[in-house]
Amino acid sequence: MAACEVCNNSFSLDEQYLACFITAVCCGTTDPLGVDRDKVRRLLSENPKLAERIARIRAEDRAGKLLWMLEEERVRKIVLKLARGHAACGTSADCRSTVGWTFLGSSGARGPACAIVEES
Image (cartoon, rainbow, N blue to C red; front, top):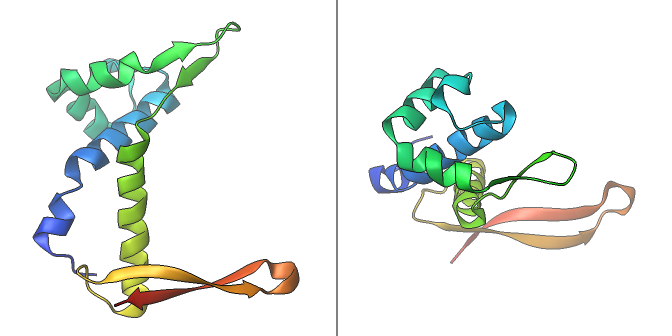
């Protein structure tokens, strides 16, 4: 699906953060030498401030288990971008359209029924 350059590029830093955060959680470190994804290793090497930022939100509980506190706003932006892209693809809308969802009521055992709609 085509996306305008502004929409596509405006999320780059948040996408880099999320990729590095997820990899750091999976590998247990923000040290570039300790991560298993080449692109993330490069990002963390080239951007030590990002590595430090993610490392600062790492903590251990009393049992020594690692805890990570993600930047919710950055993740929310990416989730919304992906949801809008999937919704726009399904409705043939472009990125300038506002896409939302409408609750249609319960469908019994299958749970709530929703529809993706283009809002005006």
